[in-house]
Image (tube, rainbow, N blue to C red; front, top):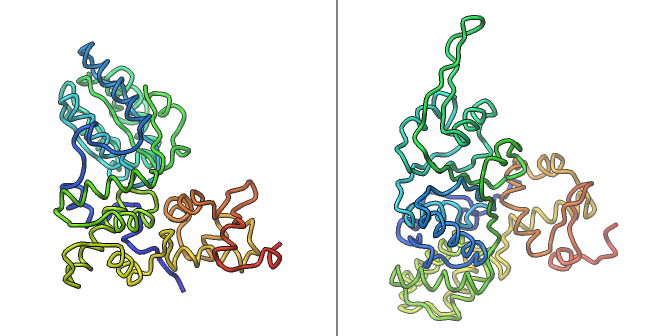
Length: 337
């Protein structure tokens, strides 16, 4: 039977995140918690551009979903007082779609393309001269009658975001002046994010409960904020004015989320490798068929966190569960391999 990761733990954006993003998203770089080295680099990058009275270079943010790529794009726009237009890569289906977007930009604006790795290669080619020379080359007509029309574009800055940098073509990657990678957050950083969110949402919560939520957040701010909301709902139903450790633990027992932030879906993932494939290695296609999940879901949702906590290794021959994972599952090392 197929067991999906609960929406509360998926790092990808879901409908309920619209409210949380609107209320909890930091507006300035000084309000952004975590990613300290990246923040320092960005601060220098932005300050230098402002002093020269120049536009910022094109930026590419890489990293898993829910780590703050869109938030940083919005912060950059706020810091340099520029308007930002947000579009998702899959929404740009034809070359004409991108042409319409580019020609609608005004001087000094920012274009943010999320999931930029999902752009069609033919659409990517339109971006090359647009990013380099601020021109749009359109082919009109077909065959011998075809001709290229060059349209001058206003100077703009492109910010791209991707969870799969390996899928970006080299010509596109090379046209970004700055490339920043967002890593998973430290637990103490997640605790600060939860405390900040609780204050904004007027939630009374003690430090022990904050720690319980942080432990289960999968080192991802988006997940942490969702879990805070779930625990708040549980506390309200139980008529608890202050969320303490016992309330948080009771809520997570009901949600079936353990102290590592793992659920039955994660355990099934690990058990299939352990039991069906003798601990691995197993290829992604085989694993996808066994789980009934798309390869992209496995690579973006399940694997990053399991690798982060040392439960899974990716080897040239396939996926392998580690001794830590076997211990977690209660499997004796001698029963595998």
